[in-house]
Length: 202
Image (cartoon, rainbow, N blue to C red; front, top):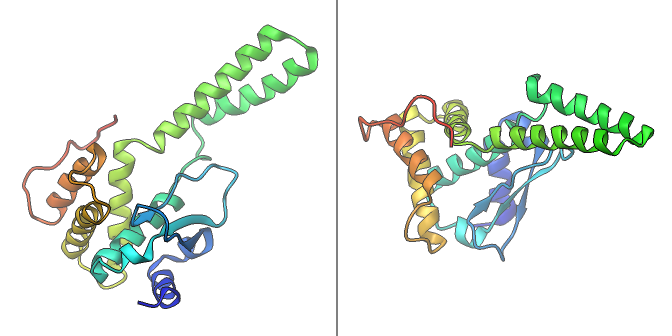
């Protein structure tokens, strides 16, 4: 497998927003097959997707396709800047912090900084919860439908990709989040009649 040719093929798989906002980087020393680290809000361009191509080549093409679509979806669907109460508290806290700093009010500074930190943490949690992981899987499957996959095929490939990537990485069991995702994907792939609850948040 030529790394350049595979990167070019993977870029063709991505939606246009994925090509604009992410960058595939070869990372032969990493233990993970593919890694799309959580992107902070100031990094709005070239969010990296790291791939160990020595491990990557051991996955069938369909599984590689769904794993790259899933990684892309996880990076382009981060909602740091959606208008909600946490956004307003961050804004108010930041303004308050600047005002209180200018006035030299130590108590005011602590309160404003605390409000800002709590709200930022909540926004971070909202982007890292289990429900968001399931939504990201479904977003990847939705994109795959425009690339010639059926929903069942896509769910099966993503499910098998999760399982096989873990084996390649030397992990004998999936982590909790992967187990929940796998059960949901089994339901989408018609492999199980049991799905996870409609809305979950851990």
